[in-house]
Image (cartoon, rainbow, N blue to C red):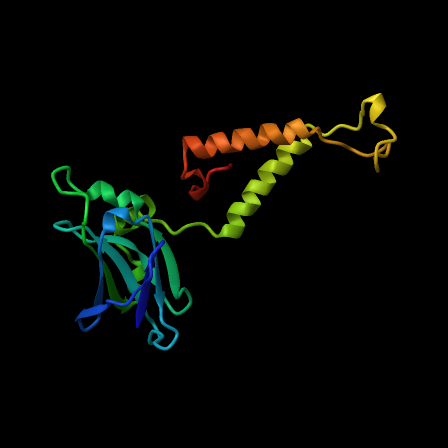
Length: 200
């Protein structure tokens, strides 16, 4: 009924049913996980009005709510990196086995989620923004930066080189190089800044 893919690994095939509407995946070497994709198999859609809540659990800890699946949202990517903070300092962080839990429930339960689950969703494992959204934000930032340096004043020796016209607007190449340097610095200082809703 469900599938899961840990980034960089093969598809998980070890789904176990532990109750009538509850399923688990065992995730070996979970300390190395950053993201996980959970999906509904196309051969087994939910009954009308039903969906699934997805949870993550470290050994000896409580389940942490990640998000949900429905027929309208049959897959989701969850970020697990911050859940490692739930491991205690005395627990070994090599070879840890975690549990991915899935609970099939009426979708009305998703609207009335407890505040703790909502907080866990936003603070621990929010779904990644779509790639197109990230690309659009990067391009908008690049365009705005470059446009602020556009000029129609060319050096006198530039006329007559290639397809340069006197009334066109130009951007010095060094401006793009400056933007690129600043953008890489932002990534190096905060590798997760593209995941946030903040302006780039």
